[in-house]
Amino acid sequence: MTKADLIFALKESAVDLNSPGWDSVFGWGRVNAYAAVSTLESMIFIDGFETGDTAAWD
Image (tube, rainbow, N blue to C red; front, side, top):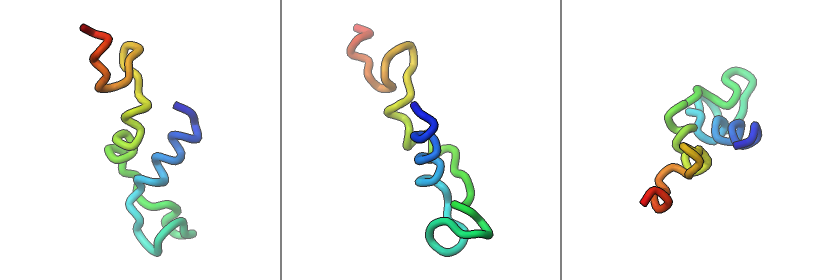
């Protein structure tokens, strides 16, 4: 995962608190860490395998 991937996930999953998109009061909104991690789930590697890919474990 790259820095750009993380920034994208945080922006896309933020809870907007004012007008849609970025604004000078709330920025992108409130961080929703669970949604950000869920957005990146397919990019997270555990023991060298993508999450959910158990085929190589058999």
